[in-house]
Amino acid sequence: MNELQIPQRPRVLVLGSGAREHALVWKLAQSPRRPQLFVAPGNPGMETLAERVALTVEDASGVRAWAATHGIDLVVIGPEAALAAGVADALRQAGIRVFGPDRAAARLETSKAFAKQVMQAAGVPTAPFRVFDDAAAAADYVRTHGAPVVVKADGLAAGKGVVVADSVDAALQALDEMMVQGRFGAAGRQVVLEEKLVGREASAMCFVDGTTVVPMLPARDYKRVGDGDRGPNTGGMGAFAPVPDAPPDLGTIVSERIVRPVLAELAKAGVVYRGVLYVGLMLTAEGPQVVEFNCRFGDPETQVVLPLLASDLLEVAWATAGGELAAVPVQWHEKTAVCVVLAAEGYPGAPRTGDPLLLPDPAQVAEGWLFHAGTGWRDGQLVTAGGRVLSAVATGWDVATARARAYRLANQVAFSGKLFRRDIAVL
Image 1 (spheres, one colour):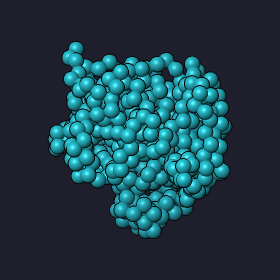
Image 2: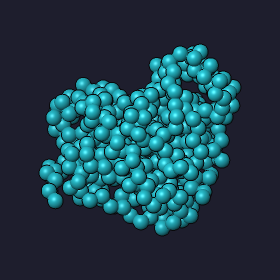
Image 3: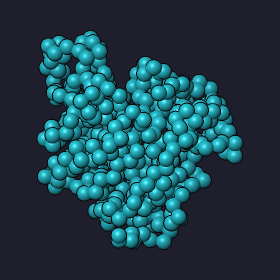
Image 4: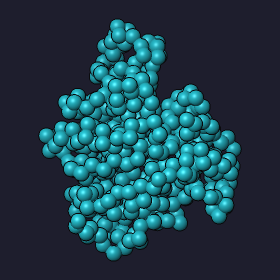
């Protein structure tokens, strides 16, 4: 096995500001290689682990210039917006190693129509679909074929561009909001209409270095804002991993029947994929079927998968970025992790911000972590600064233990209007 050529105390830049990026920085900081960590723009929770940098993550030339000037050895890209903006392309052109796919590969996430067409060509199991860029034609299709139907904005919509419509009226309303009223701007001008799959969801993220595919532990996230999967979709209200009702060979199924065929299809167009490929699955009676692809770590799935990673994330990310993933053994702790997202009042609509935050003493937190997302400073006081404020995460030897610890931690956090689901990881 070849030894990775990683510099002494490598300088690593993480792009992003959410709980996902806090978890990434936290895990990278545990590397025995003692990396010098930078995060742009980061949040208050990361300040003890990394130096915050005032960069705009979508500014490809700005990120490239700063990374080159400051001798960055590796850039880890968190959010999809940076991938869509071609930040990975710009960094690679400058000879900087980057963990994240180029813009052409990231189309698997930035265009749902493109992803469905690639899956269709590759023979990947997914729901039957149609693509429309004309609102009247899409509405006629819904009236003719009826409901239930899933309406998806083609482009990026911050996790809120999917409507599972159980009636024709609901589907027509979603089409009107996306295609006529322009709720998601250019992202909703084209839509994908697909058959509703029946089953239980699972998120299967994989490290991919172009040829080698290494599946992570499967996770399950909770997208609706309210208990019992009620209310509008959000960016995610919680998660747990691993998933006890997933097939024991799910990793092999995802690697061989989904990821490798997709990589082969991309390769026909000269596209090499390096980074994380997130496969959103529905576990149906006919087997796992793909709901969506994301081209980066999921949020909040990252917050439960990384605490279970026994290997050095820095080594894994370095090897993935350099096409050397086969040289790194990826191992996992035999535990369970649960994440409860603490959101601000009004989320996912217009969340209230600026409320003082009271957090427990870290010394009083057993088997758990608070990953910051929508937090900020105001006059020296930690305050809420976004919709999803914190991720309360805990591990345990079983789901019940991890769940109890995560909720105990969630209840130790105080801020006005605190909103969270109470049924995360209830099996």
